[in-house]
View 1 (cartoon, one colour):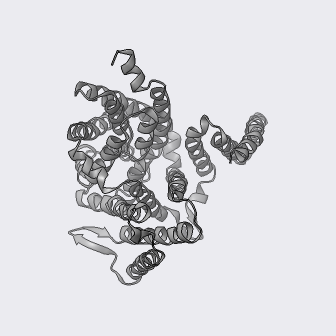
View 2: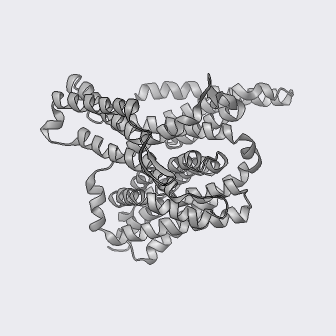
View 3: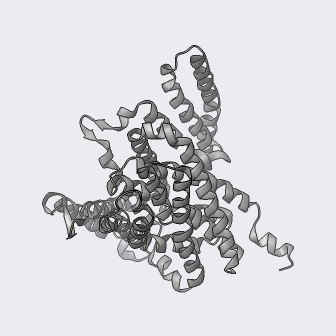
Length: 438
């Protein structure tokens, strides 16, 4: 693997400078339209270089986002429809797959830990759902964004923490167990908190329908996460029943058949209340993925005697690819708005994220949490679930401009989180205690 990385690094180190030089020459000669393929090739080769670099690989995901953004800005029609099929329909299933992946990293103990550490979880919860939505509202008004874009800024602030915060907490030497519990709990209450905050704060910009948003979150986030929890049990349980080929084949076949049955014969809505309805697609995706996981474990772990952690390696790649494609679809549909307010949204993203880290950390200190918990709270407050926000903007609010803020804020949070995690990693908590004589 290391040999492959070295080969990729040595080859791409010449490709992206060559692409950049070609772009400069074409622009100097007045061939602006011809630079498109070279811009995409520049970012793609740079992303491959970052992936193969031992230090820069943590920033590779952000560069891949640039690849897809550049492609969607230069060739927007390629991300609109294919042979009459609206690619926007793929956003919700992709987010459901990503949320399923998040669920596979959780177990019931992650929710139970709230009783073991209630005070840190409570502090993080309060800060998460006060600092970020209020800061989003303030920035939307200060920058004077138009109504739909302003609603998107509030939306990203009103969403729970994302799974990336768990990774950043680990890299920074924070309390990973607390981080996972906070993410799980804030996500669990998001069907209530996110619509409530949007109604109270973003209702002045666009109409917010509480129940539709609540059902949308349950369908798009909660149901796939519950399915992921079940898949986690299938994958990692020590009980012999989940290591028996016949049981795995039965689970896989049964769940896939139930999902197919729902596709063919079940009504579109599982539950309806007034004008709002809970759609069946989240249940279908969840059942299909449980079946795929069970059958994949049967083939990889039982028949081929492969590694037990194959899911841990596959899901991050799937999640990153899904997020990149979602961002490309959103960018293509909001190209004109992005050309107008893109720099302002980047500025708002930086400020919003920075305030989350700073206030999250120092309010946690004021609440007398230990250093590792303060770092954890900073990441949980400063980093939101951008995929969820994008899906709600497109599927519930039916607004591509509202999805612009999540599309921009999300990649920036990964960049800033990586930088902050690296900085804190160089200042380990244990070393600090020893210096103080602890």
